[in-house]
Image 1 (cartoon, rainbow, N blue to C red):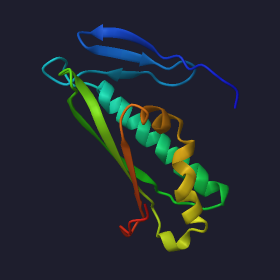
Image 2 (cartoon, rainbow, N blue to C red; image 1 turned 90 degrees about the vertical axis):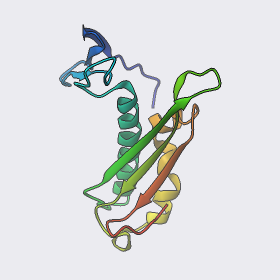
Image 3 (tube, helix red, strand yellow; image 1 turned 180 degrees about the horizontal axis):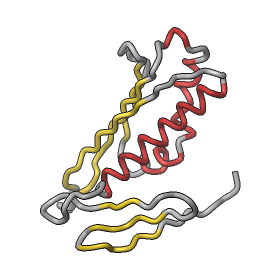
Image 4 (cartoon, rainbow, N blue to C red; image 1 turned 180 degrees about the vertical axis):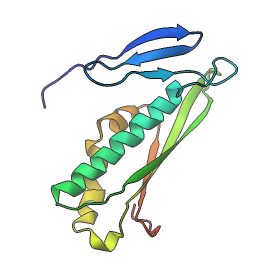
Length: 148
């Protein structure tokens, strides 16, 4: 894939609220800090970051399974971001944990070991963000069987 550039425009709507404009036919999104800074009327920047990580991991897992004509639907993902202070006392995302759940039993999916061994490597967002802090990734099937 050739290098490309993605542009998102943010326009302040009030206090800590920003309209996030993605272009084309993609609907805009209102982001907002939680109280006491904002009003929590939209996702915070940390929530958007966690959503980006989870969405990218989910897309990568889905793509890898579909390459083998496997359908894990409905796939779900929960991402927990731990926020704390760094050595300078500044708030930072210290780590994330992503838990992906397949919508089907693992026994019904061919090539699952191969998929689980490599799908994270193709996740652009997680591999980029993971250079700044650790991101643990876990996968389970619809019955709760831990796969990764």
